Amino acid sequence: MTGGGFAGSATAGVEFEARITPIVIISCIMAATGGLMFGYDVGVSGGVTSMDPFLKKFFPVVYRKTQDKNIDSNYCKYDNQGLQLFTSSLYLAGLIATFFASYTTRRLGRRLTMLIAGIFFLAGVALNAAAQDLAMLIIGRILLGCGVGFANQAVPLFLSEIAPTRIRGALNILFQLNVTIGILFANLINYGTAKIKGDYGWRISLGLAGVPALLLTVGALLVVDTPNSLIERGRLEEGKAVLRKIRGTDNIEPEFLELVEASRVAKQVKHPFRNLLKRRNRPQLIIAMALQVFQQFTGINAIMFYAPVLFDTLGFGNDASLYSSVITGAVNVLATIVSIYSVDKLGRRVLLLEAGVQMFISQVLIAIILGIKVTDHSDNLGKVYAILVVVLICTYVSSFAWSWGPLGWLIPSETFPLETRSAGQSITVCVNLLFTFVIAQAFLSMLCHFKYGIFLFFSGWVLIMSFFVLFLVPETKNIPIEEMTERVWKQHWLWKRFMEDDNYIADLNGDTKKDGKSYGFDPSSQL
Image 1: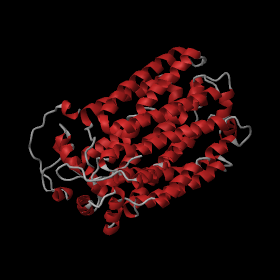
Image 2: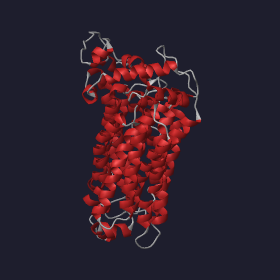
Image 3: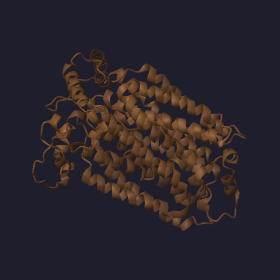
Image 4: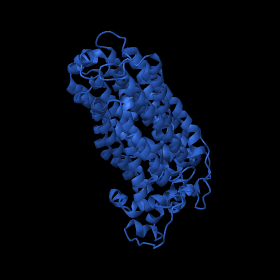
C-alpha cells in the first residue's frame, strides 16, 4: 500500500518525454493485483466470523454468545480476543515481514519481492481453506500476513517508479482501487457462501483468496523490473533498455542520467534507516508516519473488517448484515474510482480536507442514531433508521475511499528521496500494519465498552487529522519526485527550516548547519 518511486524531471521543472505505453498500463494492472489480495483478506475475515458453522468449529464460546438472548449487551456478543486474533494476526505478521521485504526490495528488486509475496499468499490460502483447528487457521493467516508485508513494500514502489509523472497519482491509486475491489468480491462471495449448509461455505470463502494470489504470482513472473531498481543494482544498460521500452520514446537520455545520478547519491548512504532520522528527512518521515496512524484512526478498517458483525450487532440479522456490507463495499470501489480521476486534477489536500468534513459529520450522526435506538437489550433500529445508518456509513466510506484510503499511501510514496526510499517505505508500512493490528485486535472490545461512542471516538480523530493536513501536509500534485525538496519542502512555512542549503552530499554525511533565517506561516501558500 505504500511506495515511493520517482519519475524524474528536468532540473528546470520540465517533465521528461514519456508516452503512456501499453506495457506501463499492463505492468501496473498486474502489479496492483497485490491490492486485490490484500482487500480480499480484509473483507473475507469479517464475513466468515459472522458465519455460524465457522464460529461453531473454531470459536464455540462466541457462537453461544450470539445465540444467547439474555446476553448483558448487544454490543458485546462478538467480544472475544481469540476471534480478534484471527483477524489481527495477519497484520502483526505483515509488520515483521516488512523488515525483510525492505532488504529484498533493495537487493533483489521490486519484481522478485512481488513474486515472494505471491508465494506466501498461496501457502496461506491453502492452510486456511483446509484448516482443521485454530492453530492451523492462525498459521495460515500469519503466512498471508507475510505476503501482505512483501506486497505492500514492493507494489506501490513499483507503481510509482514505472509511471510517467503526470499520471503517477492515478496509477498509484490502482493499488488502492484493487484493495476496494478485493473487499467487494469478498463481501459478495461471503453473501453467497453463507447460504451453503455444512462446513463448506467458509472454506470456499477462504479458498477463493487463491485467485488473486495466483494473479499476483503470475503477474510478477511476467512484468519487467523498474529502471530505478535495475540502475540502483548496477544494471545500467538493462535499466536504460527498460526505460526506453516503458516511456515509448528514444529520447530518454536526460531521464536516464538523472536516475543514474540519483542512484549514485543514494549509494553514498550506507545506513538508510539511520539517514531517515537526519534533519532534512524528518518532514517526510513525520508526515508518512502520521498519515498511517491517522488512516487507521478514521475507523475505516474496523468497519471493513467487521462490517457484517457490526451490522448484525445493530440488529440487521445475518443475511441483511452481509447484504449491507456488500453495499458499503460497492460504494468503496466507486469512490476510489473518483479519486483516480480527481487526484491529479484537484490535488491531494483538497480531497483530504473535504473528506474530513464529510467523515466527521456522518460519524457523529451515526453515533446519535445508535445512541437513541440501539441499547444493551434492544437492537430494533426499525426500517427507516436502518436505511439511514447504511446511507451514513456509505457516506463515510465514500469520503474515506477518495481521500485517506489512497492518499495515505500515495503521499509517502512520492515524498521520500531515493537514498531513504526503501527504508521510508518499510517504516510507513510498519506503522500502518502496527496500528491496523491494534485496531483489529481492539475493535470488538471497544465496541462492547464504548457502544455507540465508538463512532464519536473515531470522529474526534478525524477532526485532529484534518487540522494536521491543513497546516502540515504540503501539496505534491504534478511535482516530479526528485524535485520535491526544492519545490515542496523548501517552500513550506514549517518544513523549510529542516531543509539546509549546504552541499547535498555533505548533508547526507551529517555535516549540516543552521541557516539562521526566520520563518513565517502562510497557510494560503499550501492550498
